[in-house]
Image (cartoon, rainbow, N blue to C red; front, top):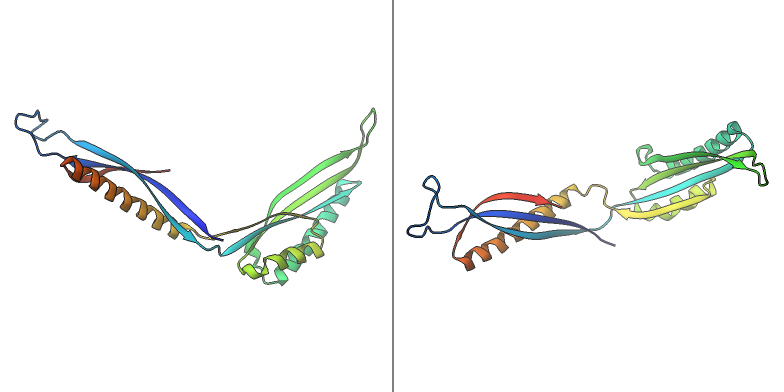
Length: 193
């Protein structure tokens, strides 16, 4: 599995045409023109982390009871995952939801409460990803809401992709300038999308 970083650079470069005899100038300088090109650069990376979202959902008759039960289950899940070597900084709560449960009938009445807690675990040893899910489920997680692979810090790759996009843009602008019989000047602007 590979992840690609894509950067599109729009580069506007000034061109300096040779002044024509009798061509109007501004302040003694020939008119500045630009060539605008669009280029992309990409870098393919192998993921180095897995992100797993697991959850605990509990229903009880009171808020106090549902909070205690959900907290106890989630504490067991966290303890088990931490015992597998997952650092505390790689475990974070992503959501906690408490909602009333109603009876059916003509006059709905609150009959209890449901609490859901979601936890995201970052696994840095990809071989442990399946084991983390199995362990969390064995310790009380009754929801698995996602497993995905990504690069933990893609900033260096994004910089490489940007540099590749700008190099391609310069090459393209150079070819256009040569075909038009003009010379490239300095970069006027660069934008990224």
